[in-house]
Length: 333
Image (cartoon, rainbow, N blue to C red):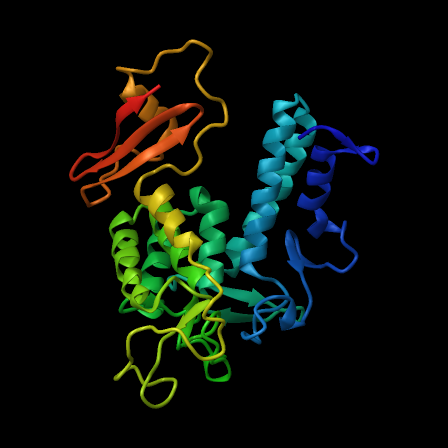
């Protein structure tokens, strides 16, 4: 990670990328403290959501996350001064992100150079904000965000990437990022986000529902939610199917499998450092579970087992026990 390349270390390059929003990129302007303006061309973002331009919540969250992670690395290298600088900058981008939130709604706005804000009810902001800064969201805001997805985006067995209540919905009938369905990857990432915010029941129900489309074969680029007449008619909406303007052979459902592994079974970000040489784990499964399983004490709401998990030379099963949470069993060394 720290090897030299063209005169700069990798951490230097990571640092440059993390602060590119703050003047390092000549194509990016600032709308205010911590608020980057990425321009007015919607083709740079979600080309099927015309209002998704300029100051975007998803990118604000990404900037915040990159600086925080880069700061951790600098701190591990004993460069406390740079770590503190990045921490201060990341606070400014997070505050700018919070300013885009529509109070009480669960969704965000886009900030425009003229000072106006346009509401954008897209799953992309939900996934990006939760994935980047979920630990910094207050409880009320997190609850509102989850409830908004359930109220406006979830349909039986699938998801709308854009709410029917979004102002641009009549002009966007795409099945991947618009209101008439969702890119298959959004489904798994949304379930993962539910888990990050503590709603494992919602994640489980969503993943179980998504299995209903598999009678058509593997997950594809996107699944369209068909309605009998016009866009805003909910009655008569049929089950999600492949079709429309999407590539049926593009398998984009990897995030759904990932959500089962890292959200339902907690095997999300196990430490890179493995057991010490000669260390014996047999009989210490509970200690191992505390080390590598995310929120293992939280009930996932189902009984099941993920078998033959491999980590740092060990092989084991992860079991979900109703009313208890996760545990490691059948450890082989």
